[in-house]
Amino acid sequence: GYAEPPSKIVNGENADITEFPHQVSLQVQGQHICGGTILDATTILTAAHCVVDDNGVLGKGLEVVTGVTDYLERRSDNVFSVAKITYHENYNPNNYWQNDIAILK
Image 1 (spheres, rainbow, N blue to C red):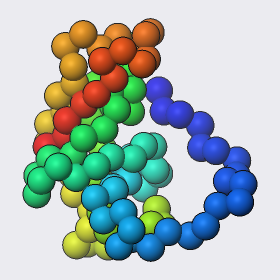
Image 2 (cartoon, rainbow, N blue to C red):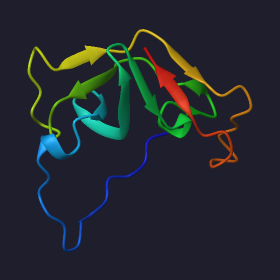
Image 3 (tube, helix red, strand yellow):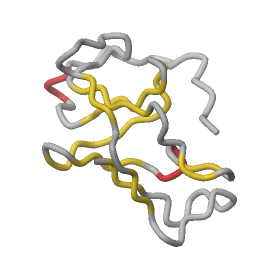
Image 4 (spheres, helix red, strand yellow):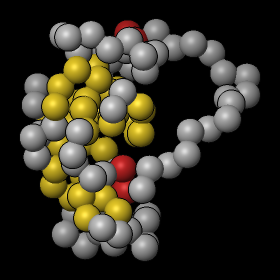
């Protein structure tokens, strides 16, 4: 399943999107579930545990939100549906940190 959101960030600072232009928010039903990195115009790199659980791929309703530092800044020009999820063939949800990588298209 999805990770629980953190309760707070201690001594954090607001980020400007120009500092992290390749960072994206992965969301389901408008809720942030994980981050990702833009590799090119149609490819996002993320962790497999963000998109796979014991029941399989969690792709239904998964969206990529770009160009924001506030998860709620969804606009028609920055929200993209995920058409394909590919994760490492040796990833096992019960062994999170090994082969924990996925590509979204």
